Length: 191
Image 1 (cartoon, rainbow, N blue to C red):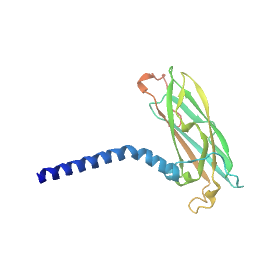
Image 2: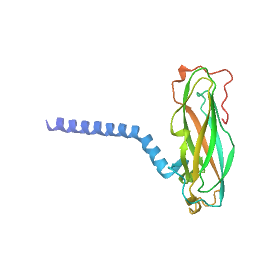
Image 3: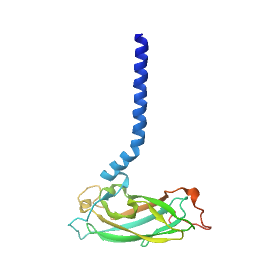
Image 4: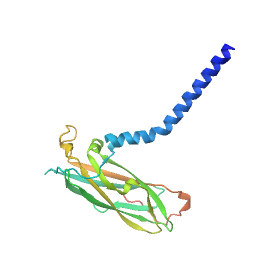
């Protein structure tokens, strides 16, 4: 009888461990994403309500890199290849997306900055990347991004000499790809 109780306890413990591991595996991606956004690790930019009061005379070049996942029949690109902004100053730039199909298609943009360490100081105020975008058949839209580079970048020994940051976006399809037929000759700029 004692052996049976012991085996039952071991089985119950193992089932609990497996259930806990399964739960952690589902939570890992959102927890990692929250960690990266909080620390800037992996080139994940920060988010703020407004730009700081301090604006430095020093400028930094912001380059834009745009990509589209193969399953998303959109054209997507920055209206400018780069901008020079004063550190601490709010900047507004526009990206353009076009749906190449005859049906509505939804996409979500993933983003990061390079060098990765600059993610701690590159801060977005408003961005199309914060939510899913849906473009109607043949629709073109301009999508704004408002950002600034935190003045603390010049105080950090590992970032004070950075003169250029690349902001990179990749749009991924976020609807059912079987619902949309791609237009002939679709291409994805920046890929």
